Image (cartoon, rainbow, N blue to C red):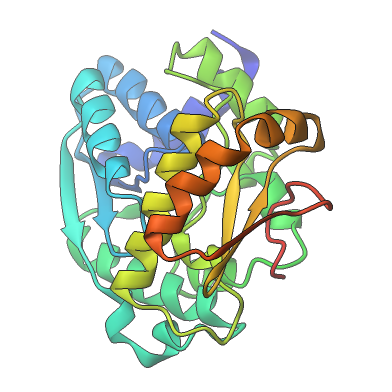
Length: 266
């Protein structure tokens, strides 16, 4: 057992008796917490529940992936439905959208976690240091605890923990919500979100070796962000990429010379 895993279990152990609910997206961070809870349950039985939100803002495949891992690890799992697009503060896609959305979704998880003393999420130390993470304020306001951040664990340490816990694909990229593909001020609709989801699925199928990939939606223009090292792959598949994206309504397809960067609209 690694030192960081020992520290994580020590952090969780005092809370076990009152019950622990996990906001569980299926990403590397929350998967590490899921596996740690499963490890703790081998010591002693305690109330535990992994809660996965399904909203229009997530890739639909994420739900199936999250459920499969929870079932494999033997942690009770529940799907929670929510529609942040029903809130004008979210669908208008203003710069404070992330705060409004996180506040709504975590409040929904709070309701689903009734009876559990603790609700935790997978925010890590790097998230806490990031310059533009308004959603973290909503976590603090609602009393959601973040063990990885509390222990000072940055993303590389979390990936090491995922490897130690034998979790699938510990190096997989982050999958931020689909709203991040649109400039602030572009209204968010179900149709727009599904279109960008379909577009990125087609891109990943054509560029399987490109792990960090975003399609930024500018109406009828699609702006592709990939690491600079992957530019030759994109150009080699230029015709296939155009053929894949134009039927979705993207008349123009561009390659962003600034390369992939998380949160480029910020």
